[in-house]
Image (cartoon, rainbow, N blue to C red; front, side, top):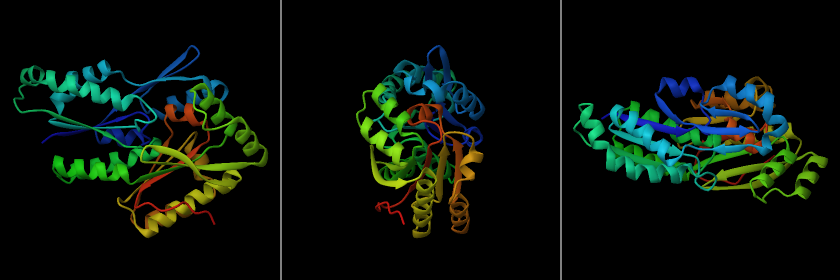
Length: 315
């Protein structure tokens, strides 16, 4: 059976990996004033857009995911011919309409695919499963990587589905934002009151950084640490400790809102890489999606993995 994998462009994985494994991207379009870019995970295009627009006016950005009709057209024009079963994994539905759009499109796709497949010489049925990863950014990469591994190992559709749904409930993403004022302004633009002016001002004045935690569709602060580099080091250390304790998949995903060389120079990074290598855990690093950067600001760092739940601890 030919199994296809689809993610949206907020999923932080390297473009080379996505292309090598034939992972299809549902792009999210970002508009800042008159500047528009459809995010196809091109890191150079993202960085160029970041330097030109995001730093100054990113909090004003409008993000537009693929519509129901665009998703339907993509599947009927290509995917129902190329594959027999497709897993479409989306950013958490609590933060974006793309999951609901994909669900609505799936009904039309399953109603309309037969003539398209028959014209291409395929008389077998086509199936589609939309999975809410219940997370964001680098954390979305965990399920995508596992889907590739299982597909390549010859796992059945049922085995992959059960595994991906299990991982979605046990994937943990941690983020350290660099600029709380930006985060506050972006939240205010979107009508999200979770980052207040007072907390942003105090955090910036005292150089206190929150550790933001994504899990099971929720995002919330789980710690406050003085100093950006210290906070990142604590996040990397915690991630390394979880690796040594044992993960549910041999995967850690990292993403950064800028040049990756900046992330690699942060304290704790090399220790985390050494721990992953010693424990045979593969690390995927990518520039954060443009969608991610306009929502959380440049310079943010994200680390993600799948494991049983455990409280964040800073030492």
